[in-house]
Length: 239
Image (cartoon, rainbow, N blue to C red):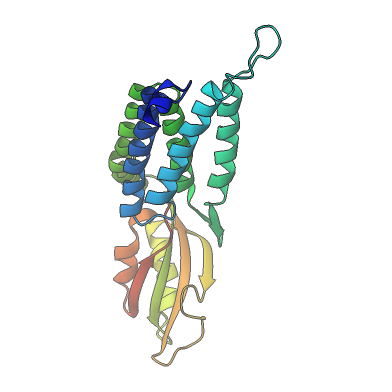
């Protein structure tokens, strides 16, 4: 069986190595996603990357027995283009919109990226596949804190869920603090999270605030310092 594998067109050890490269690099990206608790983790990323490599290999070598010069001509790049479109639908299913906030964009992009890594490995471009894998970690390790640093100094938007004691004028104090800091309240939703907006048995209510303006990304400390505020939870971030 191994002899047949080595002799088969498109089923030589070179192609086996390309599949294993795609499997390994996709797994590395998946481990990072799994460690961060994202929806498309180790198994999803590994399957996408390995399958994309297989699609490319099938496109390159899988139709050699039907080719005939001047009669049957195949374009391997067509399969690669279809992989890009197909993975785009998979990524779209990972994007969640909730109360105007969008989640899953980075996860969807990482699935698309994993497919590209697999396609590069399957096309016999292991150096490019390794480079993109390394750049993935540059993006998630260096750009995430850089983005937060820029947001604290820019005019970013951030959602907070504030739980406070009812009947103490806390909501009025929250809005006054936002005005004092120069933050605009783009949205306010009562009863976000586990609370329903009504007074609970322990006298606590919650409200969701979407703030925009300079420093709004780091507003939790100012909101928590208001008398009567019990808890400040960060809203959903891009993953």
